[in-house]
Each structure stands twice: as structure tokens, then as C-alpha cells.
Image 1 (cartoon, one colour):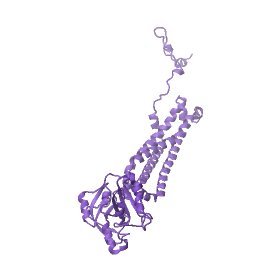
Image 2 (spheres, rainbow, N blue to C red):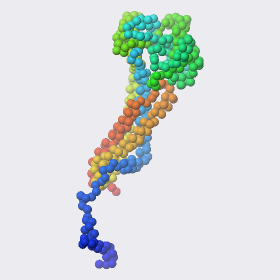
Image 3 (tube, rainbow, N blue to C red):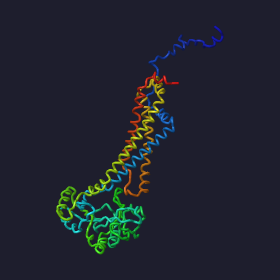
Length: 422
């Protein structure tokens, strides 16, 4: 043996006291004694994998955020469409012409309706349809009876302002939402250019009413029906003493159907037959005119989520395809199929959690900005149901995007995966 060969191997260790060598005191471990891979949740590995391709991950998160945000806004638009009907009272009925709202009813009907059993109060109103400054400044305006506010306790008006309105024939009441939008104050002159009732009508703001809760729509104005009717008697006598609808306050919601039938029976076979229904049904009749628009909005919101599902699934599939050798290596080290599925699912969940959370967090401010810019929805707030649906959509994206790559990674064969290395 040469010197080189002699120095290539270390000398055998000296026997320890007791006759046993170090080799014997440290026996070679068998396969059964090797430590198994840790079953701890691989959060660090998930974080590294999720942000390995930062640009791709950032774009995916941005797309998911926009999709969740768009879904929330579109669903809020649908909710805003139904806001009027949702805020309707079950103790109020609306009686109108059985033909159409365009056909008016004699104001004298109020006395006969008041005599029906179960009726407490009867008020009436006309749609005015005036223009404030320019046509884009649209808001509902009603000529109402003096007892109209008695039928709407959800409108809160200080007694002093109500008394001032009662005294002034040209007085007008505006809702808080409307006053904030246009800056109306008590004492201001509010001119309206009539479309149904021709001419320019000048009113004085005598009160600003609030809603009993934030869900009440207060983006409207109301003034005295008598003021309009007196003018019609002078200029168009045939149009005088007619109203659009009667608002009927009843004593018991359980009698609503019977009272409606009794009211309509009073005017059966007359020149102006009535159709009496609950206030909610009356409001929903207007929403029904836009059913196709609402259905289209709902469809678009679902399509947005389906598109981001496809994008997310493609992202996860690309990621899993690039890491087939890594998954085979992990399997060779003893990690099971469930561990690999957990890696991919965790990565998908992390991306969805970030994107979905950002989308939900931005929905509220975006809704407020849209309401301020558009000004067509008096109630435009993101509901708890919409937030829950957004969270469900993000979770659905997680599952759909992860299921196929997770199954593929779990089924990868060690030999096939390692063959791709190099």
C-alpha cells in the first residue's frame, strides 16, 4: 500500500473502554428507523410556491380582486333596484286605475274607500314629473294630500317644519338624500318646470324629512295636491279633481286581501274601475318592467366569476405542470399524495384569499363612489348577503382551480417525474 492509499482511509478507531468499538456503539440505522417526513402543514413551502412567479401571481390576484369587486357591485345594483319594494309597508294598500297608471281616478273615491271595513286612513297623490334645472336632474315629485305623512310614519319631519308646510300652499318637503345631493335648505326656492302640468312652478322648501332607518328612500319631494288642483281648475277644468293613486291604510295585515276586494267591488262596472294591491306588489310592478335588464345584470355577474375560475384554473395547472419533477422528488422522499394535494390546494387558497379579501374590502368604497357619481340610486349599500356571496365565489374559485392539478400531482409516478429532470 502506498502512502497516498494509506492516507486515503482513516485509521480504525481505538476500542473504547469495555471492549466495544465506536462502530459497535453507533450501529447503522435500518430503513425502519429512518425519520418520516414531517406531517406539519407546509405553510412556508406554500408561500414560496405561490410567489415563485411573482408577476403571474400578482396578475392572478388582481384579476380575482376585480372579479369579486365587479360581482359585488353588480349584485348591489340589483339590490338597489328592489330597495323600494323591500322598504314597503304591509299595512298600506295602493288603489289605482285597473287599466293603467296613465288613467286617473276621481278624488271623490276617497270618501267611499274610507267607508270600507278595516280602512283607517285614505290619502292620495299625483305624479308630477317636473324638471329641476335640466333633464338629467331627475327625482320623484308627488302632489299629495294633507294627511299623506300620516300614512308614512317612516318619514321623520320636525313638527315645526310640518306646521310650516301645512300653512304654505306653495310649500314643498324634500328628503334628506335629495337635500344632500342638491344642497337644498329650508327656505330655498325650488323651481320645477312641468312636463305633465305645463309651466314653471316655484315652491319654497319648508321642511327636510329623514328616514326612520338607512334603508328608507328619501330621495323625493312632495307638495300640496290642492295647489296643483286649484291651478288645473282655472286652466284645464277637465283635468281637475283627479288623482293617480289612493294610499289606503288598513288596521290588520291579515285583512289586506279582503279589503282590496271590497274596495275594487265598490267601483266594479264603473267608468273608472280600480285595482287595489299591497304597496309591495305595486312597487314590484315597476321592477317587473325591467326584469330583462336585471336578468342581464345577474348573468354578467356570474359570467365574471366563471371567467376568473378559468383563469385561476389555468394558472394552477401551469404551476403544477412545471413542478412535476419536484412532486416526484417529494414522493421519493416519502411524502404521500395527500401532502402534494395539500400543497396545491393551499397555494390556490392563499391566492384566492388575498384576491377575494381585496375585492371585498374595495366593494364598499367603490359602491359609495358609484352612488356619488351616478346619483340614480337613493339606496346603494353593499348588503351582508352580497359579502357572503363574494366569499363563497372566492372559495368556489379555490376549489375549481385546485382540484384537477391536485389530482394530477397526487397521481404522478416517481419514475415519470424524475425522468423529466435535466
